[in-house]
Image (cartoon, rainbow, N blue to C red):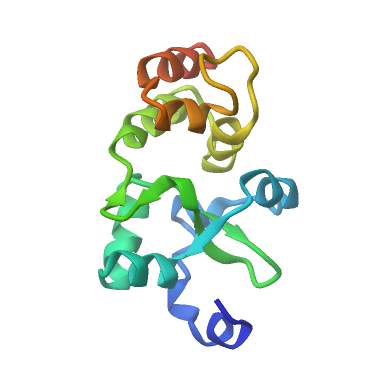
Length: 144
């Protein structure tokens, strides 16, 4: 997305009471995730209105954070496929939230490499490789 488009698309903001609105300023999260998709870009990619993407975030079908210098709301790219939110994620988000993690902490946990997983990479990679049960079991162990 161009800077001009980012500046003119204030409609991608979410109320500060939303999960995305409580995001810390954590540049390391941006680097850890790597590829982010802004709300307008997600809507365009999925062929849905902006309001539908905002609803996905509100319903916790995907998690979002404020990223970049402009602090725009964006979703990690791996949370979406061509059809929409990846279905294996929603339950995992719930388990992580029930364990006391914030949205940013959940995203960080999902993207932090873990050499003990059945596939190389981070929990998000294991989820996408079909190891949902193992990832959720580990997420439950985080509860405090």
